[in-house]
Length: 110
Picture 1 (cartoon, rainbow, N blue to C red):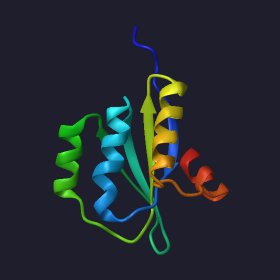
Picture 2: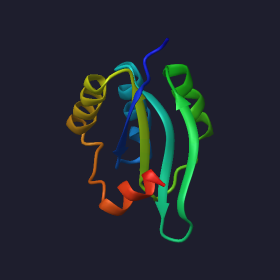
Picture 3: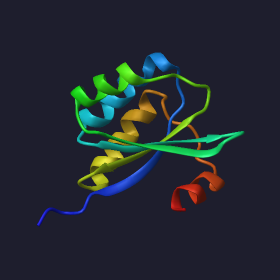
Picture 4: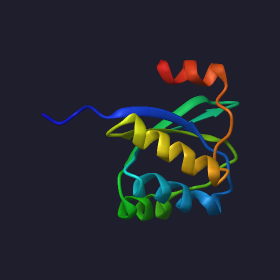
């Protein structure tokens, strides 16, 4: 039986040009971008499943991406907390992370 993946929420903030680097950082370290959420001021929480697991998935996503001004919240899964820690450290070093507010943590649990 496969071990269950662990999940972590990352709130990212960067321009559209950095999206490819952000996503390849995650998948190259063994993560999978499960879905994306945006807390839009008018529409509320909007989410979409992604399942980006590798560079081919990253390229397909970028091809279909329409940029917006809202900040995405990425749900990332990996085989262990250690991998998620490594992903978080890499995203932080690249200045892609921003603060997750308490209400956003609550939204993810709904």
